[in-house]
Amino acid sequence: MEKDKINRLIKILNEAKEIIAELEGYATKKEKQAKTIEQILATNIREFGFSTRAMSVLLMAEIKTVKDITKYTKYEIQNLRSCGRVSANEIEAKLNAVGIKLAQEEED
Image 1 (spheres, rainbow, N blue to C red):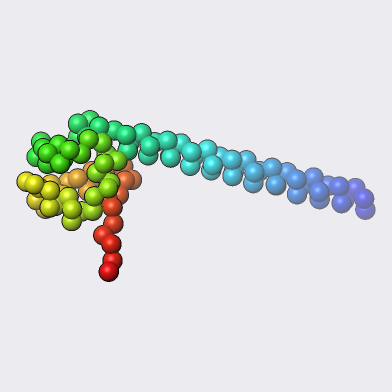
Image 2 (image 1 turned 90 degrees about the vertical axis):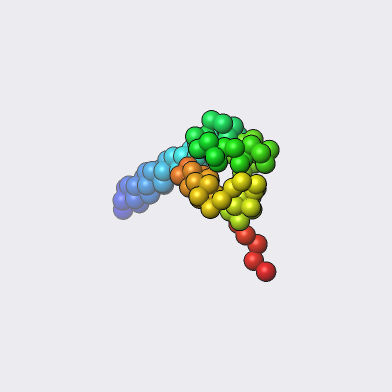
């Protein structure tokens, strides 16, 4: 009887170890994702692969990094000097492709 209890406890402990290992792996993965996002945000827009037109719009607005872009809503991007719908869509799509979003419009 006592041996059965010990075996059940050992089984429970082993299951707990597996769960802890999975959680540690998940945390490590999230840490890596956060570092990747930080690196992307720090990327100079010249290195991000925007078209000449989109690059020109961003540079005229003195936007230097990807993080700077994320401070703007799509509407604000579209209203930058010489920026139209196509360039705004390109900028948004390039950011979305790497998991980055533009600022959200405020709801009244």
